[in-house]
Length: 171
Image (cartoon, rainbow, N blue to C red; front, top):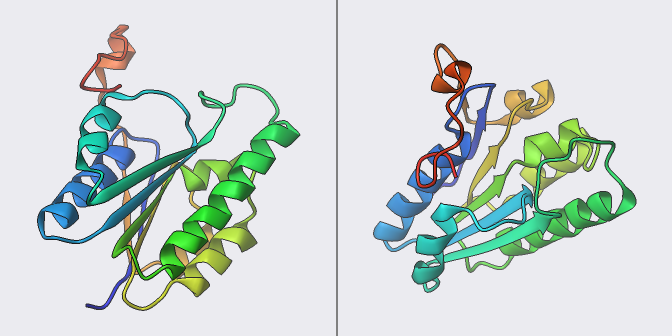
Protein backbone atom coordinates (compact mmCIF):
# COMPACT_ATOMS: atom_id res chain seq x y z
CA UNK A 1 0.00 0.00 0.00
CA UNK A 2 1.23 3.50 -0.84
CA UNK A 3 1.68 5.71 2.20
CA UNK A 4 1.14 9.46 2.30
CA UNK A 5 1.95 12.41 4.54
CA UNK A 6 -0.97 13.92 6.44
CA UNK A 7 -0.93 17.12 8.49
CA UNK A 8 -3.60 18.06 11.05
CA UNK A 9 -3.08 21.66 12.15
CA UNK A 10 -4.95 24.83 13.11
CA UNK A 11 -6.22 26.50 16.25
CA UNK A 12 -9.36 24.38 16.62
CA UNK A 13 -9.89 21.33 18.81
CA UNK A 14 -9.55 17.87 17.33
CA UNK A 15 -6.08 17.36 15.83
CA UNK A 16 -4.94 14.63 18.22
CA UNK A 17 -8.46 13.21 18.29
CA UNK A 18 -8.43 12.87 14.49
CA UNK A 19 -5.05 11.15 14.61
CA UNK A 20 -6.30 8.75 17.30
CA UNK A 21 -9.35 7.96 15.18
CA UNK A 22 -7.07 7.12 12.28
CA UNK A 23 -4.94 4.96 14.58
CA UNK A 24 -7.99 2.97 15.67
CA UNK A 25 -9.19 2.58 12.08
CA UNK A 26 -5.73 1.38 10.99
CA UNK A 27 -5.44 -1.04 13.92
CA UNK A 28 -8.91 -2.38 13.16
CA UNK A 29 -7.73 -3.12 9.61
CA UNK A 30 -4.74 -5.05 10.95
CA UNK A 31 -2.14 -2.31 10.44
CA UNK A 32 0.56 -1.61 13.02
CA UNK A 33 0.60 1.89 14.49
CA UNK A 34 3.27 3.93 16.23
CA UNK A 35 2.11 7.04 18.11
CA UNK A 36 4.82 9.36 19.40
CA UNK A 37 3.61 12.34 21.42
CA UNK A 38 5.88 15.37 21.57
CA UNK A 39 5.81 17.69 24.62
CA UNK A 40 3.24 15.48 26.38
CA UNK A 41 4.06 13.14 29.24
CA UNK A 42 0.85 12.66 31.16
CA UNK A 43 -1.82 10.02 31.63
CA UNK A 44 -4.51 11.12 29.16
CA UNK A 45 -7.72 9.08 29.01
CA UNK A 46 -7.00 7.79 25.50
CA UNK A 47 -3.82 6.15 26.76
CA UNK A 48 -5.85 3.87 29.04
CA UNK A 49 -7.46 2.17 26.04
CA UNK A 50 -4.43 2.37 23.76
CA UNK A 51 -2.31 0.49 26.31
CA UNK A 52 -4.79 -2.39 25.96
CA UNK A 53 -4.02 -2.51 22.24
CA UNK A 54 -0.26 -2.98 22.59
CA UNK A 55 -0.21 -5.74 20.00
CA UNK A 56 -1.21 -3.22 17.29
CA UNK A 57 -0.55 0.28 18.70
CA UNK A 58 2.69 1.44 20.32
CA UNK A 59 2.59 4.72 22.27
CA UNK A 60 5.52 6.76 23.57
CA UNK A 61 5.72 10.29 24.94
CA UNK A 62 8.61 12.73 24.68
CA UNK A 63 8.06 15.54 27.12
CA UNK A 64 7.97 16.81 30.68
CA UNK A 65 4.26 16.33 31.23
CA UNK A 66 2.73 19.61 30.15
CA UNK A 67 2.65 22.11 27.36
CA UNK A 68 5.43 24.59 27.87
CA UNK A 69 4.34 27.92 29.33
CA UNK A 70 7.86 29.31 29.59
CA UNK A 71 10.96 29.22 27.45
CA UNK A 72 11.92 25.62 26.73
CA UNK A 73 15.05 24.38 28.43
CA UNK A 74 17.72 22.00 27.26
CA UNK A 75 15.78 19.10 28.83
CA UNK A 76 12.81 19.90 26.55
CA UNK A 77 15.03 20.18 23.48
CA UNK A 78 16.77 16.89 24.29
CA UNK A 79 13.42 15.11 24.78
CA UNK A 80 12.11 16.39 21.45
CA UNK A 81 15.33 15.44 19.63
CA UNK A 82 15.17 11.94 21.14
CA UNK A 83 11.54 11.71 20.07
CA UNK A 84 12.41 12.76 16.54
CA UNK A 85 15.06 10.03 16.37
CA UNK A 86 12.59 7.47 17.73
CA UNK A 87 9.94 8.48 15.17
CA UNK A 88 12.54 8.11 12.42
CA UNK A 89 13.52 4.67 13.70
CA UNK A 90 9.85 3.62 13.89
CA UNK A 91 9.36 4.62 10.25
CA UNK A 92 12.52 2.83 9.11
CA UNK A 93 11.85 -0.34 11.12
CA UNK A 94 9.39 -1.87 8.63
CA UNK A 95 7.28 -2.70 11.71
CA UNK A 96 4.75 0.14 11.49
CA UNK A 97 2.32 1.00 8.70
CA UNK A 98 1.13 4.24 10.32
CA UNK A 99 3.41 6.58 12.26
CA UNK A 100 1.87 9.53 14.08
CA UNK A 101 4.02 12.41 15.34
CA UNK A 102 1.54 14.08 17.67
CA UNK A 103 2.21 17.76 18.50
CA UNK A 104 5.38 17.76 16.41
CA UNK A 105 4.32 21.04 14.81
CA UNK A 106 4.09 22.65 18.26
CA UNK A 107 7.55 21.30 19.08
CA UNK A 108 8.75 23.14 15.97
CA UNK A 109 6.90 26.37 16.88
CA UNK A 110 8.53 26.28 20.33
CA UNK A 111 11.99 25.79 18.85
CA UNK A 112 12.47 22.25 20.17
CA UNK A 113 12.76 21.03 16.58
CA UNK A 114 13.45 22.91 13.37
CA UNK A 115 11.43 23.13 10.18
CA UNK A 116 14.38 21.33 8.57
CA UNK A 117 13.93 18.46 11.08
CA UNK A 118 10.29 18.03 10.02
CA UNK A 119 11.11 18.20 6.31
CA UNK A 120 13.92 15.66 6.77
CA UNK A 121 11.50 13.34 8.56
CA UNK A 122 9.10 13.57 5.61
CA UNK A 123 11.96 12.90 3.19
CA UNK A 124 13.05 9.78 5.13
CA UNK A 125 9.52 8.31 5.14
CA UNK A 126 9.50 4.93 3.39
CA UNK A 127 6.92 4.82 0.57
CA UNK A 128 4.67 2.30 2.35
CA UNK A 129 4.47 4.27 5.64
CA UNK A 130 1.63 6.67 6.34
CA UNK A 131 3.02 9.61 8.33
CA UNK A 132 0.78 11.98 10.30
CA UNK A 133 2.07 15.24 11.79
CA UNK A 134 -0.24 17.04 14.22
CA UNK A 135 -0.24 20.30 16.11
CA UNK A 136 -0.89 24.00 15.70
CA UNK A 137 1.38 26.08 13.55
CA UNK A 138 2.48 23.62 10.89
CA UNK A 139 5.28 25.31 8.93
CA UNK A 140 4.29 26.40 5.41
CA UNK A 141 7.02 24.20 3.90
CA UNK A 142 5.61 21.16 5.73
CA UNK A 143 2.10 21.98 4.52
CA UNK A 144 3.46 22.27 0.96
CA UNK A 145 5.16 18.85 1.17
CA UNK A 146 2.16 17.03 2.69
CA UNK A 147 -0.31 15.03 0.62
CA UNK A 148 -3.27 15.83 2.86
CA UNK A 149 -3.69 18.85 5.12
CA UNK A 150 -6.62 19.44 7.44
CA UNK A 151 -6.88 22.70 9.33
CA UNK A 152 -9.03 22.66 12.45
CA UNK A 153 -10.62 26.10 12.77
CA UNK A 154 -12.45 27.18 15.91
CA UNK A 155 -15.91 28.56 15.30
CA UNK A 156 -17.51 28.06 18.69
CA UNK A 157 -16.29 26.36 21.86
CA UNK A 158 -17.76 25.94 25.33
CA UNK A 159 -14.37 26.86 26.80
CA UNK A 160 -15.39 30.42 25.94
CA UNK A 161 -18.22 30.06 28.48
CA UNK A 162 -15.80 28.89 31.18
CA UNK A 163 -16.29 25.13 30.79
CA UNK A 164 -13.07 23.38 31.80
CA UNK A 165 -11.62 20.24 30.22
CA UNK A 166 -13.74 17.18 30.98
CA UNK A 167 -12.27 13.71 31.55
CA UNK A 168 -12.99 11.46 28.61
CA UNK A 169 -13.86 14.34 26.29
CA UNK A 170 -10.87 16.73 26.34
CA UNK A 171 -8.49 14.82 28.58
